[in-house]
Image (spheres, rainbow, N blue to C red):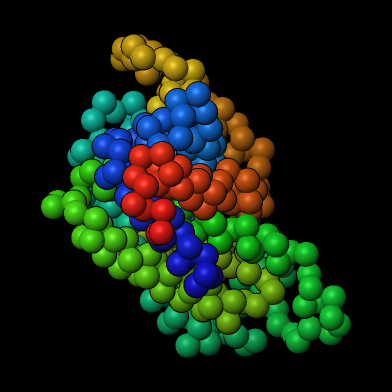
Length: 339
């Protein structure tokens, strides 16, 4: 994970540097100026696919988180399908139809605080032993989610092909590269040294949080860890239910921010220049409908994240930024070749 985080942070920085050297304001525009306008559809398609998988993952998480919350706090039993249709109709669609998303900016802080609370709550449950062999909440869990440990018995256990799923998922852990141009342009006093400092600190904090959650989750549940580790915790556990609320709110208010990338990415690929409100509304409804159907059909979050990371995620995070910066150094800034 340290290697993935370091490489991701470095490539994130390369995108900002390319924008600085070319004056580009988007990932696609940076590619057009550094590489070629003829192949600018490649980063546009990569951004579209990556953001599409991201909002699909958000919908899948909300569809399993909300039923748990309804049972814990309201005593209601609702199905995954009911939760998915309800949250899409009542919350996600109105949010995605908003013309300005500036009002959602403060809610990003809620998401950050929620992630730190979740990490602290998981550590608390690991230390207090409530999910141990005779733990207070262990009996509430189905067998497939109950803690399961054991040393590897054969060499094949250590070389399990599922390790490649984990490696692929690591690409999604640090994936925000489609927003790198925006972060660079909107950074106050956006010099490259300042940008690189912000990138370095941000990726280090993210790495630390990911390592903490992954380590505590595995230490608590072992081989039984679910793709969404919050599913391992009992619905009777109020402390972890607050974590579910925090995650749900974080996803709810970050959903439209990611969805704009999906919608605009599709329109970029189709080279649509004129974008009246009527067109944006129609595209929003159509895309959200497709995403909701896919979220209903798909249930394995880990495989979705692995697929996203192994394909378009790796390209957008590692390959395209490197090639773009090399082309920039070769064609526009020869003095950068040594870098």
